[in-house]
Image (cartoon, rainbow, N blue to C red):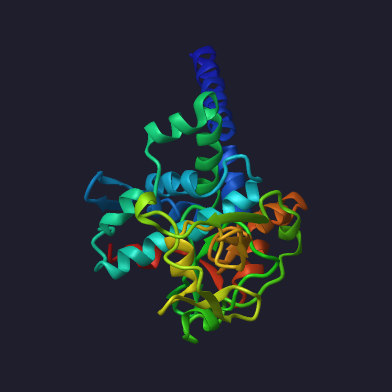
Length: 312
């Protein structure tokens, strides 16, 4: 009897050690990161509804947006920063839609499906998907707040050397954290300066081209982006002009050229919020995503999304 009891005791002891070994990584993680790693998983359970695509987990949707909006070969901390911005914007859309998880219909065009990712990445699909999934998991449940509200989190690819002041662009003081920020490295980027030649419309050339060469930039903001431009007798914003003529940026200059109009742009995108190029350069210098977000969104705080999703 003693012999069997001794064997049973050793088996029991071995089982205890095995349990400790299995649970050790979890115990260490909780000790280092605190209990929030448990509550953050609630964000993974939130479902969003998109008319064209049905229901899907919010984090899965965010991966698709991240795939579309930032190159997958960017640095880890830049991808992490982008993941927080995307998640914040998604929850802003959910709140504006009434909190039932429904996203606007146009949200279906804002993310890549698995098929689109495979088409874009080819043999790199598995590796790129893993990187983007890690970015969402590394920042699980984290969103940007300004005061008691979700912040507006715009981003763009490349600036002209500075980001724009939202007050000048939008005419409101509602977003004081969207200020002019220096992005000196952007001016050295490969696609910083681009040129487009616009021809005057004619019956023979259909509807392409510009209506007239009587074009005048009437107003720019503090960092050189066009706020107001006149085309003939019509006045429009710089962003309207950029979108209408498919320009890379709203920061541009005009020059008559052999009966045509030469438009030279600087940067890529609208220029408000985070420059992805500068974020990536900061990440290369070992700056974390929290520091990157503080740089572009001064006065905001990273918080858990738990309080928001109670009503979703």
